[in-house]
Amino acid sequence: MQVKYFEDFTRLPESYTPLFNEAEIANFDSGRDWYANLAATALSPDNCVLLCGVEHNEGHPVAALPLHHFKNKRALFSLSTFYSALYVPLAAQDQQDEALTTLFKSLKSAEQDWASLRLNPIPKEQPVYEATIRALKNAGWLPFSYYCFGNWYLSVEGRSYNEYSEALPSRIRNTIKRKSKHFYSRAGGKLEIVTGNDSVDRAIEAYNKIYLSSWKKPEPFPDFIPGMIRLFANKDQLRLGIAYTNNIPVAAQIWIVSHGRAAIYKLAYDEKFSDLSAGSILTEHLMRHVIDVDKVHEIDYLIGDDAYKKDWMNHRRERWGIMAYNPHTLAGILGSANEVARRTVKSVLNRFGKLTSTLKNAVNNSIRHKGAKHVDP
Image (cartoon, rainbow, N blue to C red; front, side, top):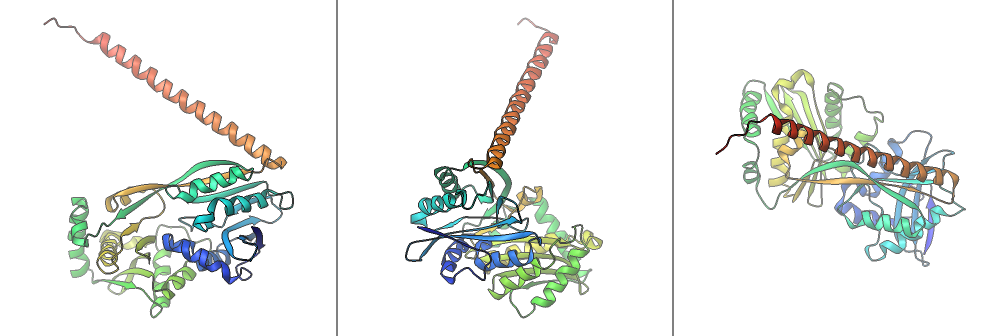
């Protein structure tokens, strides 16, 4: 196997596209065009893309690892940012271990001389997570795993929306029913779902207006979201829901429907209209659409353990990261030593905290026991 490196997606041969297409079946943010948009719109000027590919001697790609790094630095990072819900090393299933090991050996070599490699957020429940750790170890890296965030999702299990909604908390059902009556009859409410290119420019304008009126900070890379919206609109995978009151856009949600899964990507509402609960009404509308119309088997709330997500979803999984150090470099040795020391201190503090809690409970129980009156039968 041979490892090749490319500095941007325009130089990456088209022969690598099937690897991205295969990964995109499971994760909407693993496609080649997703990464191309991310690299073009969501990296700082001192950031450089490094695309690593593994090919058979005959030139057939069997693995790809999209990475980035800062100029004049020896640390590598997965090509993922706060816009990324998932990151997965791409490799042919039957050659995963060999291809990834070959790739990581090349990155660790004196010729490349990279000191560290951070990959995140990886789905811990998928085999690629353990395969990546295994390949890093086989290649001579020192890998350490760490928790990134929780991920709530709904397994639809063939239910209609009405069947699914019966399991929702009663307060959610009652709130939506009560607020919907006011939203439609008194507030001039209207809901819209934009799916394709016909209305995408108007939808982006409405979304941006709502986002700027919300509680959220301005986007640090303002071109990424419009590029992403157009990307999935072109694929007919966009479900951009907009709530209006008297023709004023007051809430918006970006959902992506791909290969039987719906991902809830972005939510925003105008705070001046928060009393309308337009966000909840819009969520209910989009839920009904993706379940009854798109017939998805899974709905994913993506990043974080926000309390409201538990109301709509029924399962939780975790996204983890891998921090690996090259022991053939001074920076890698120092980094791994610091990692071990930090984790050791954290473990000791956790054990001390548990011991302190146990002793405190024992003392309190003793005090309660001594203070209680003994009554003979």
